[in-house]
Structures are given as structure tokens and as C-alpha cells.
Amino acid sequence: MLCLCFQGLKLSRKRKKTLPRELLAELPPGRAGPRRSRPAQPGLGEAPAAKKNKIKMVEAWYMDESQEDQRAPHRLQPNRAVSLEQLRRLGVTYRKLDADNYETDPCLKEIRKAENYSWMDIITIHKDKLPNYEEKIKTFYEEHLHLDDEIRYILDGSGYFDVRDKDDKWIRISMEKGDMITLPAGIYHRFTLDENNYVKAMRLFVGEPVWTAYNRPADDFPARKQYMKFLTGEAQ
Image (tube, rainbow, N blue to C red; front, side):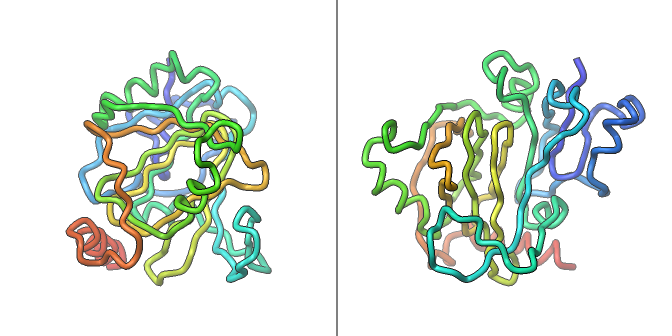
């Protein structure tokens, strides 16, 4: 089985020349996969989605400063798109997987083994499914950081992860079914549903989960200081 890793911009393990020409045409240009605050293990993405003529990759853009409905796209006018390479430079890892077969997907299994994602659960964010829904939505949208990487795999529905760039500007990442994202420890971020008001996501963790979020300002934590060193290295 052919597994692809859209881990930032890199295909791992399988050489590009083994891929069908029409698939190569769909891959974004670039030179390397993501660098993270800790050494990246070889991760594999999913192949069945690649059987289609087109692969819909994650979309990201700089946000406007409107304080209206957080679920709206909030694109600048004109739109200012953000590439996978730009996300990589922020330490954000992206993979495209086959969410229809997540329970038996060998590529997901290999990712979990390579990254040591030993813990997993599934969360559904919808007013009829999540206890204390309104309170949780507000909490998710508070700007915060974690002391560990945050890994989310969208199994159904959609939503937005917002992350700060090196100049403290908000970038909105549109997450849909099949998208897996890893936000590095120490990055300021937040999450919201989009206008569909529904998402089902897998949460992955190394070891026992620690859900503590530290709202901004949280610059004195070692994880934040390490992340800032990472950004400085990427800028050079």
C-alpha cells in the first residue's frame, strides 16, 4: 500500500518518482518537511485520498481584525493566503489522511507508532453532543498555549485553528475531514467551529493527556521560550 506524507511539504519514505504523474502535479512545491521543536519522526499520510484526480489540501489565510462572529472566515480583502511552507516555518505540521477508514488505516497506525501517540479519544463538538457547549466554545477560542504538542485529526465536519505568526498576526487554518494538524508546544493559538457548527475530531497525545491551557500572557513557560528560539532559528 502506498502511503503519502503531506507533512508540511515533504513526501517521506516513498520516492516521488514512484507516484503517478497526475498525483505529482497536485503536490505543492517545496523543499522539505516541517521542522519542529523536537526532532520529527518519519510520519506517513494516507493513500486512498490520492486515488482521486485532485487532493484538497488545507487552506490558510491572514485574518482581518473584525470582532464579529468568530465562525465567519475573516479573510482580508484582498485575501492574503498562507502556504504550507509558511506554516512549516511556524512549526505547524499538516498531514492528509483517509478519515473514512480511520479505524483500520495502516498509515494512521504508522504515524501513531512513529510519533509515539499512545493515547487517543474522539470528541464531537456540537450543541447536542458536547456538555457545557457554550462554555467550551468560549474556552476553546481564548488565546492560549500548551506545554505539549496539540494533535487533532478531523474525522467529520470542519472548523478553524488560528495561530500567531512571528509578527504576532493571526493566521486562520481551515480544517476539514481528513486533515491532521500538529501545533507545537508553546505556540499561541485558539479554535472555533465554522458556520457549520459541527466537528468530530480525534485527539492524540504522547502518554497520558494533559489538557491544561495557559491563556496569554504565558511567556515565562519553558515551552514558550523554546518555541521562540525555534522561530528565531527559522527566521535566519
